[in-house]
Length: 135
Image 1 (cartoon, rainbow, N blue to C red):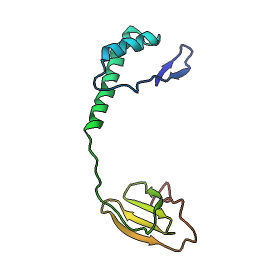
Image 2 (image 1 turned 135 degrees about the vertical axis):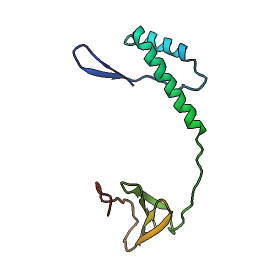
Image 3 (image 1 turned 120 degrees about the vertical axis):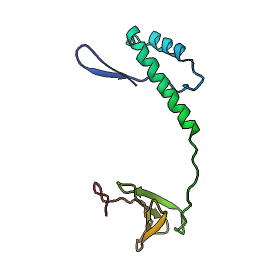
Image 4 (image 1 turned 90 degrees about the vertical axis):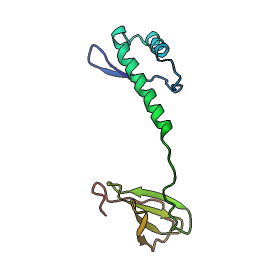
């Protein structure tokens, strides 16, 4: 999003398509293309644009080096999950299921702390007591 302020003080924005941005992107060509298509990008703004594009490319490289894997598989519900919510601190989460139960979990240990039974139907929605998140 290109955000700019008009002379009258009004702030406006314009979407720019950078979906094809990759590590192989020629930054100078891209900067020249954007400056040509966007009259708002003056010659004095090109160094900042170049810097921002390089930062975006660095973030793409960092994301590709990240590797995620399953830490722990939690099996407790008899039927599939319908919902999940985390408390504000992220230390607890609660799951709801077609099996008509809710289970509260310790996020770090991956251990079930409480089972809430007695629901008369499938549990479709759950939440912690926000903004406190302690109940």
